[in-house]
Amino acid sequence: MTQEKRVATLRTVRVPKDKLLSTLKENRESHKKEFEDSLDGYWDAVSMEIAEHMQHVQESMARNIERAKTQDEETRTSWSAWCVEVRKPIDHTDDYNRAVERLEWEIATEVDLQANEFDCYVLNKWPWLQEHLTSITSFASQHLSNYGSRR
View: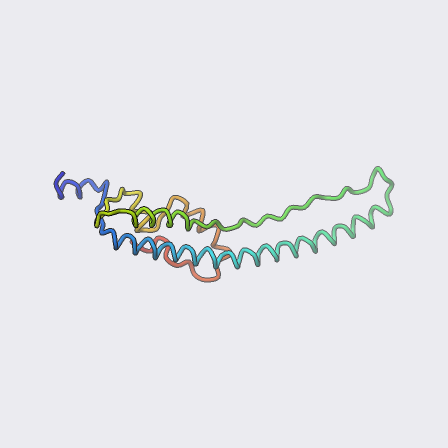
């Protein structure tokens, strides 16, 4: 296949392996930092949620105990079950590690990438991107950095 025809299809793109490897490592470090920053916020949110929940449970239990004192066994208020839910951010560093590892084993100096691989490895637009951003947004301590910034 000629160079012109290969480029014209836009199904694949040939990139320098070293540049791709460098970009992947930068993207991996950005992801790792954002994940770690969001974990600090996550644990703070969990602690706050548990503290608020415990306050509510204590107040509810005090009210129920007072009500129970004035009611017979059949009409006493039942204890409620409580649940605390805070969604933990997900670390996708292994996705980067697998791609880096494959590239480090590649002996060619140039690599052909499919469109979806280019989106992930170069543009940092992975299939899990939206879910990841949603999971870290409320916990990130700093502005979201490099996701989708390589346009």
